[in-house]
Image (tube, rainbow, N blue to C red; front, side, top):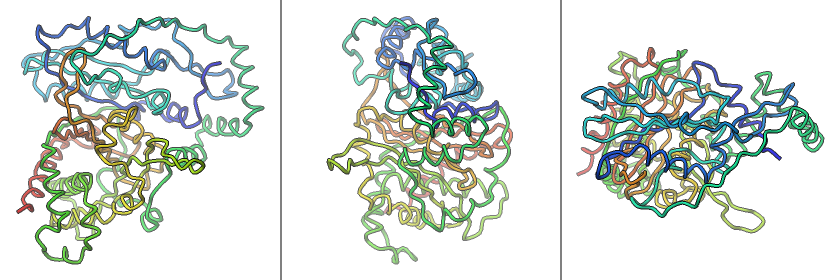
Length: 484
């Protein structure tokens, strides 16, 4: 029996259009292994790895008359060479050229007649390395049956053990009669799903979105935040079909030093004395990240001549990983994602106070006892950074855009090198998709001592996204200068 897409999964297919693609991406750079890049070896490696995740060789098959949600079926014509594509940058192969390629590749919709993923191997980088660009549809990644493509191809060793022989043979696709019969049987067993299917096909996602939020951990939204719409900002405008992509690389140790200093109380300045020791003790690396973004958005708004008063905020939706307990057995089942709304205090001129204000808002999450620590999260099987970025984006997609201005996904990754077919990964930048009326999405991953920001933006609305990238660097320097 073919697996049927859930109402939440299929909603991403209904919502997708030319200006709002529903796939999550990543950009990974690698050092060439001894002897240079062996593309055929890398292709064999990817083919062997997707054998562990059958979803990557399945495509969506729609049910006649939309009697039920579509099903996943094996792609009998699966062609690995279609999904793994070879590209190269013109000399000199700069980071700017790579970012421009990412901006042009990512907005293109995936072919729904095939498995919903693509991977580009980009040669010709100026440091004699290469890059890998991935695209994975949100309908495909659910964290259970399928994880993100970038997670699938990476190893902890440059010389991993050989995978078992690939004996995969596609199962025959169901006939039209079988599709209709299975749909009718599912309707009898679960009549409410028929209502959800009709709602989704007609564009009514409110019920589906509510169920999705419950399934993925619900919302931890302070009442005052949830009861009013997000403030007006230049980030919320109609978007087109073209993108820009900017990157920022930072040192993880800087974020840790800032966290440690302010968690101890730091230098008492201004209203910082009014913050309780409990709040200071809850300062995390994620708080420092959000305070850095707040400072960057403040500086960026000022460069645009926008009015920034003392109470100006930019509301961010921040997906955070939590633990889910089994109430019957009292055991932890694993990780899921909660969506938190955070009012970034861009009107606050003091970097130290911006950090304290962010930490105060995030303290409720830490006090819940469900928050997943960075070390535990980085080592949790099945929930590597690419997959969590995908799950976080799925949560954001289930909520009203009127509630927030920008999505920020921050996922701690492993602090040891990872490899793909013997090539060491040097950096990894998330590419978070844009929603309607959302001109910017920010993703970042910590990996092997670094923190890597990916700023994905609408090409027309955010022609100055590189300015925002510089503002991120400057905001981190400003926070670093608070450490004495």
